Length: 98
Image (cartoon, rainbow, N blue to C red):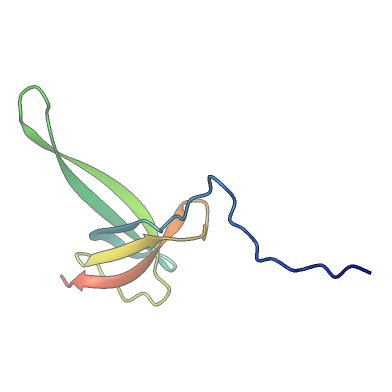
């Protein structure tokens, strides 16, 4: 009988290592939904032709297990598994308090 040698699994070619996205924004709604806060991120963009600055914002539903974040807090949050239809983010820490 032949003895077979075990080899370590090789990574799939073309597969890349991904890191979870991390954002920071202001809490605009807390306490209205169980274990959920709504965070708004504002970005300043510039018009290419005229050079005028304008604001664009986006809202995220973020999982808050303990309910420690209040309206006005600046919170850091990260990408995670889906908690519900709209929640794919988890709060990781407070940057500043309101």
